[in-house]
Image 1: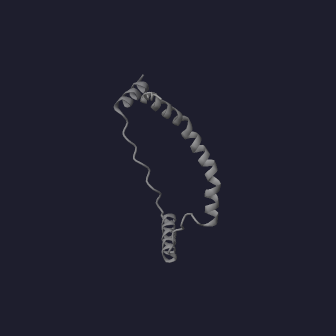
Image 2: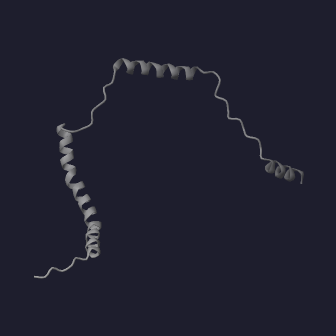
Image 3: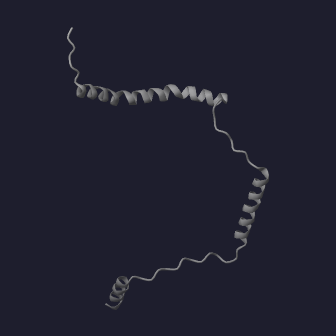
Length: 102
């Protein structure tokens, strides 16, 4: 039996070409097949997000601070100042003067 030489370029082209088709198919399959498994694990509590612990004293302090800021803002007698208008460009002023003069 005689061993034939292997054309590495053709072999690489076949492998990479088949991977272009097979990788998206594998991804879609894993996504749809894995979703029920992940949902079951989440419901059972084996995996999941941990809720951050909330310090009740800190929460009360921040709530009070926000309320004080809202009251100070409501009690403010002077409305915020309007932004200062930028000066007219020279070209616009010249055109306006020509239109009003003519």
